[in-house]
Length: 497
Image (cartoon, rainbow, N blue to C red):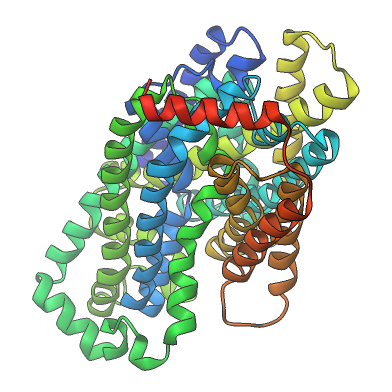
């Protein structure tokens, strides 16, 4: 299709706003600490929405609705797992990680935290954790590039090869220029736009199909299994566990954990948790309803984009927005997809840039590099990682949810058990952390090729946890200083200061 004037205007206005925020953030970026973590200055509201927006990528408006459209209610198990996992992450990881990174020589990145937390095997631990980040974020960034390309392909009628570049351009620009502050400030705007779109769209879809009762009746008539959370017994225990296991991944996602590290203080975390969880639950419900009730809508309106959705279910939100709303409102709603894509892609690019700049360049190449030099190296790395992600995403048959699932499992298994145990187990050692990372990453990479129906997150997470415990117990105890730091952190957490 060719974009109408309203679509062009709304998209252009949105993109200009995001880039404008990036340049405003540039003026507040004085050193590398500002560029990577915003000087640890995020308040509760921005922390909450930035963590949520960076979490919920294009899969929220494309992958998840597409899964519900294709398979029905059984895919909602993913949302349940995510809600439980996110709450656990906010409740038990956010505060301790914020305090621990501050006590770990003001660690700026996750590899930096691991290195200073254990004060042993520093170089190897830093290199391995940074390599894990680069490996799986290359795939994760590619999922955002694919989602952006699908959107520009649909809205502007561009060939996929061109849409790849246009979909990524604005995100690369404001991330490169404004760093962490630009990413966090734009995340707040984008999160607001996303929740607006995901509350409005399913309501209008339900009204257009004659109400809730009529919608359920149409779905039941088409395929009763789509109303069954167990898919007529086809899903089974392994399938349910695999969908719920998405929640395990939260403790190991570097782009989400970075938001906790950047919070202004421990005191802002509880309010941020309430805001963030409310936003997340409403968005997930909206995405589920959009995909599910889209089944009923397109059954009754076969000429309104139904063929496009049948060919690619991940287009269901796009086609509903174009079919149900006037072009001006549709432009705003489709900008919400762009917001979801940009919010996650930008923070992923920044985390990759952080790993390359702080953990490789500053750690091994130029230990005495100036702050200005590090900022410019960081900007260069953003561009480099983006080019690699575009190359990975070049296949027009790529699916957003599949790429996200693989990267999410990789991080969840490689980092999840390591982060959790490092925060709460004084006896854990650097060798244990290294064993857990390597085991989790390898199990995910290998399990993917076994053909098993069990999501690779599950065996990867379990194996990594066992590896951390066994290797730590076989290693000698951490130094007195490391154990003392652990006790200081938990004393501060207990006092709530």
